Each structure stands twice: as structure tokens, then as C-alpha cells.
Amino acid sequence: MTYKSVKGTADILPSGLAGSSELYQAIEAISRNIFQRFNYREIRTPVIEERSLFVKAIGAETDIVTKEMFSFRDRGEREIVLRPEGTAPIVRAYLEANFHKQDAFQKFYYIGPMFRAERPQAGRMRQFHQIGAEAIGSMAPEIDAEIIVLMANLLDAMKIKGYKIRINNLGCKDDKAGLSKTLRGALAKEKSVLCDDCKKRLEINPLRVLDCKNESCRSVIRGAFKSVKFLCNKCDGHFKKVLGCLDSLGIKYELDPYIVRGLDYYTQTVFEVTHPELGSQDALGAGGRYDNLISDMGGPQLGAAGFALGVERILIVAAKQGATVYPDDKSVIYIAAMGQSAKEKAFELINSLRGIEWGKKASFDTDYEDKSLKAQMREADKLGAKFVLIIGDDEISKGEAVLRDMATKEQIAVKFSDIINALKGKLC
Image (cartoon, rainbow, N blue to C red; front, top):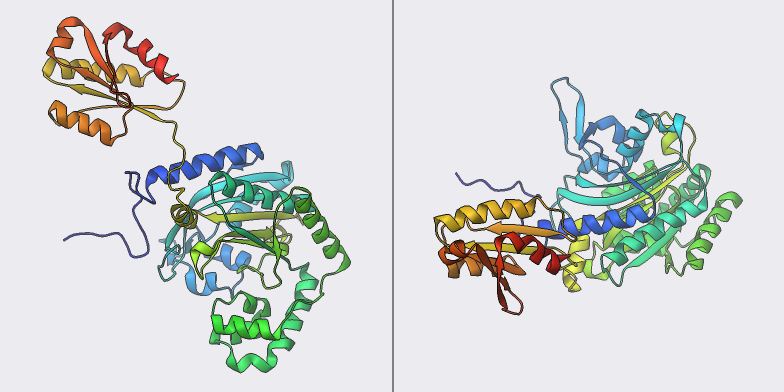
């Protein structure tokens, strides 16, 4: 029997192909560098959580909870899910670790897999990867702006061009209740032409209607509902400060009254970043403020904001824009050896080289398949080796190796005792 990966999942393989492990590593390295600049610290939560965590945080009637979570019962008869998103687990970890009792303001970032039982398609997998950040413990509008600026910095560093940031404000709980009432009234006469999901949403949580991906529903909703003033003075003032911060930094954005996000915990600022290269499912990422989630989960009343970007979607856009190969400062040095004595020397030498701290990233490899010299040189070229050390019987007798520059084809003889210094002069 031949086994295959489960539908909706994919192996991330080395080799430099689109979606390869090297590209994921490059994306992660770029992200960690940017997060460090903004003083966000990494947090890693388990991929399994109690189902009730997401029902409480996200909302019992959201699509994620009702349709998309991978759920099962463990041996203790607990309802467990594979995490569908990162915010709720991070808030759970924040409270469980008692950050709110020690140093309430914390800035976290995360990189890792998420899971949703969706119909697999381009950019939407059942196991996918997200890069995100959460700033917990502040009501300041500057945090909303920082989160958006951080997200933009990440995309810029990943060479993504042409993305759009679309922003809306849902207001506080009372504002959201007022907007829900307005929506229910505006769409009451159109209910019969809405999809079955939207008919249900209109009764339970009208804001969810704005998040419908059905094109016919979207057309009806945009015809019946236009932008409406529903924000209280406090929320309106907060939003104006957020936009002022973005304006002062030259961050481009569009106001979009139809953005509500698919998660119930959002309040006030919400946003999406989209890209036309992704087609109808055009979101690269999204986020916003969630000022009630910490208290809803048993903690104090603390403000928070965050975002998440989809790695697979970033790679799709990067590939279409010709940015699939991110800068890599790694140098590969290959040792080609012919004859048993040469192979023994190569094995000794390569492990000596691996034990040294180099001025830049360096990788060392040699032949383990008894290939001919010609085949070994082809392998070195395939690996992208910058230099090859060639060792044969003649070189063993002379106590030296031939150092070949693969770009210039220049070759020089180097004593075994001088190889480290010779390579340091070229790599450091």
C-alpha cells in the first residue's frame, strides 16, 4: 500500500521549490528579525486545546466553531480541538501564567500551524501556518496603529508589493449592539434572498452577515446597507487617533464599513490586508482590537490587539511576484574525495569545519555514495556550493587539497593545516 498525505495537508520539502522548507525558514527568519525590532517576544502554545476555549472566545455561532474545527474526545472524555487560530490560546496562556498579576502589558509573537476543516483550495489548507502578534494590556490607540505598522513591516520585508490594508471600527459592545439592530432592520426585507447561513446569522448575530463570502449575499448586503454612524464619542475618538498615527507614518489604508472579521471577540479597530493575486479569497491576513476577551475568559478588564498572516498565502503572492527566492547568505562548501584515504581525510576535515564558528552561515557536505569525481562535482553544483575541496591520492601524499572556486573556476592548492584560514578569508 502506498500512503499519501491527508487531503488538505502538504509536506514541506527541502529543495528550493515553491513552498519548500527553505522558503518557510526564510519567512520565519525575516519575521523574527522584525518582531525583535518591535520588542515582541515569542510564545508557543500547544496545538491542542479544550473545545470550550474557542466556543467562549470566538463565538458559538461563528463558522470556525460550527463548521471548521477538528474536534475529538480524548481518553478522559474531554472535548479537544486542533487550534484553529492563535489569539484565544495566547490569552489562555497569558492568564494561566498570571501575567495579568505581575506585568500586565505583554507583547507576544507566534509562528506555527493552525487547523481548520475547510474544503482545500489554493491558499486554504486544513493544516496551514500563521505568523502573528498579540499586544495585551493596553487600551492605547497607538497599540492598534503599532500592530498595523508591524504587519506592514513584515510584508515589506518579505518583498510583498501591492497589498491593501482595509480598516473599519466596530466600536464597543454597545456600539456593536446598535449596529446589529441597524443591520437586522436594513436586511429584514432582503432575508428571503440571503443564503441559509445568513438567514440564521441575521437572527443570532447580524454582524456575521457582513462577513459572508457568498457573492450573491455580498451584493444584497451592499445594496441594502451603507456606512452608518453608530460609534459612541469615546470609540470615535479612539479610531481617529489610530488613523492619525497611521497617517503620520505614511501607512496607506482604505476605510471599509463591511469588515467585521469572522470572530466575535473583536471590538473597535478591525482590519484586513488583501492582495489581488489571491483572487476571490484575497486575504493575506487580518486582525484588530479585542478589549473584552481577557475579562470574558476570567481575567481583568484589559485591552488587547493583534493580527495574523497566512504563510501559504504570502508564498503564493511572492511566487507570482518573482520574490520566491529570498536572500540567503549561506555558503555551501563541498569536499569531493576519491579513494579510501581521501574519504577518511574528508570525513575528519568536514567535521572539523563544522565545529568552527564562521562569520556567516556556512554548510559543509561530502560524498557518501562512492560517486565519481565528475558526479561529485555535479552534486556540489546542485547544492549551490561556492567552493569545493578536492582530495585524491596525490593530495593525500602532498598533505594538501585543491580549493576550487565554483564561480570563477579558479583552483589553488592549500595545505590541510591552512584550509581553515583559507576558507575564513573567503567566507568571513
